Length: 202
Image 1 (cartoon, one colour):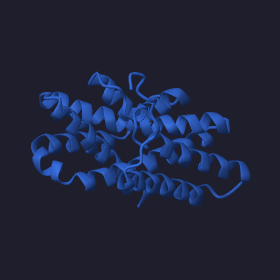
Image 2 (image 1 turned 45 degrees about the vertical axis):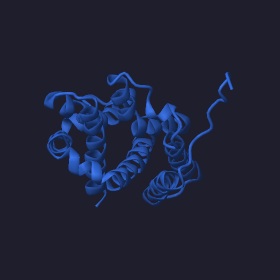
Image 3 (image 1 turned 90 degrees about the vertical axis):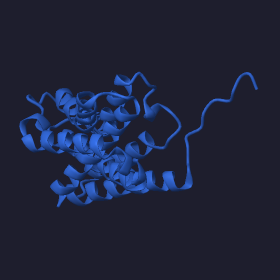
Image 4 (image 1 turned 180 degrees about the vertical axis):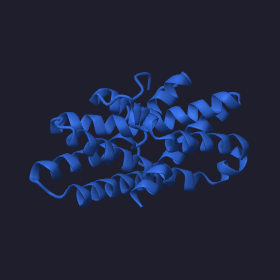
């Protein structure tokens, strides 16, 4: 079940990246590549930081297949997917929760300090989106108003704290993922945004 949910997250991230590429008027190759970068970028960055070579997502062909297929489907059916925006955002939230907690747990399992593991987990969740936005020459979404990185940070702190206390890794990862998804969905529903500086001109 966890593997199915992880692939769902990969597909959701790939679709979000591919749809951003469609809006930027990239060609088929660009759409698929941007979708794969969005889906796999965070995991690859995590493994490079932890010294895992080659990265896990490049060892298992299923990650490439799922992300590439999702990118192709987004290119072909982007008008229909645009009407399913809420479902895509929900799947994206699930992917964020799973990637954040799995990234943190992976770092802890490899013996990284809790502080480092939390940072690695955060980067695992938001790294692909940052790479997507940079490739499109945009300010990364996580640095703008939406409650995205904050939700990811909460999840990784929960996993790190559970490790320090000595709680079972599986249940605490599930709790962390649920909190990330819940905060993200609640922020979207309530239209919560992080504070921004006042306009100095006004």
